[in-house]
Image (cartoon, rainbow, N blue to C red; front, side, top):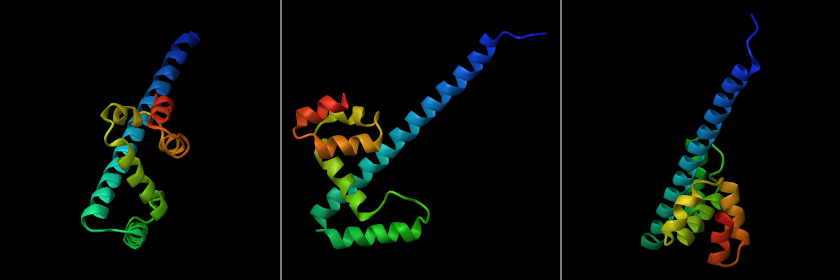
Length: 123
């Protein structure tokens, strides 16, 4: 008995859709994590006068504690802080930020000049 390939295509489409949804869910969680870290660092730099040395110490601590985890260098931690500080006053954008990858968020944040230009590229 031969089965039509349209049935196979249906299963392949189900798999592709599930993968897409999983990728988007993971991306949202990562952006939420980076937002939370940025918020925490922003608050600590104001309340506790954290500076480069403390953030470097935090990065070293994370590297030792979370062995194998990448993306938490001092430079990236500062980027998370910058990300939070720039966008926290724009609730309309904070939802959209979670729909694009972190690398795209960083490219927009570093290359677009005005808030309007950043919003244009995010949308």
